[in-house]
Image (cartoon, rainbow, N blue to C red):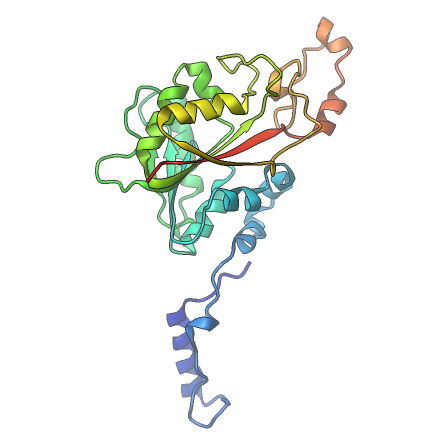
Length: 290
């Protein structure tokens, strides 16, 4: 992808052409440059950029274009992502090129060495402001209080991908949704993608399999004050039955397998699970009332 030059740069280039004596459409009159000549960087441009070559192999399961558009991520928006990773390389450059602001909501520093290394690694990886803009940072984990620090503006959109089961396991899913509510502007959007458990199955309140029922998440959001807006099947995978021996981690990208020589290994068909692809996922959109 070639990043389009700014309007000012185009004007400067036109002036240089005139001064150099290069032929123009009319003698001594530089070609007019208007705002219409300066094209915005589209989401398609960002997703097609070579820097995403490694991540793009998973686009067929994660559908970033359709997902971000469904969550109303767009130009001029202030968008936060809880515990970001894979999606940063799509969302941050898109917002940076279109007058938006990306807010990476990481683990708080000082919890433990492992998490501190992850935070430091993330900031180093996405530190190029010419690509990702000046990323703003916030923090979220159990018992860490408000997501946004004093003085930080509330968000237009807050997104989270495949995390609800983690908060269930930690016993703070309801508190998490309450803090998401507080971090959003009135009218702001909460977008949730999560491994989907069929409504006919029994929901583990600790989210042990990694799968969560849509009704369970809708209730968490409702209790926090959100209005349900819509669901999308963009991240659905009908091949996934959600009843695997190692839960969602049996599937890609984890592809967990039993230890050799164990009874579980005898009938385990790793190739069959790989052919399922990534999990079936609920894609839910909520709104904080105005």
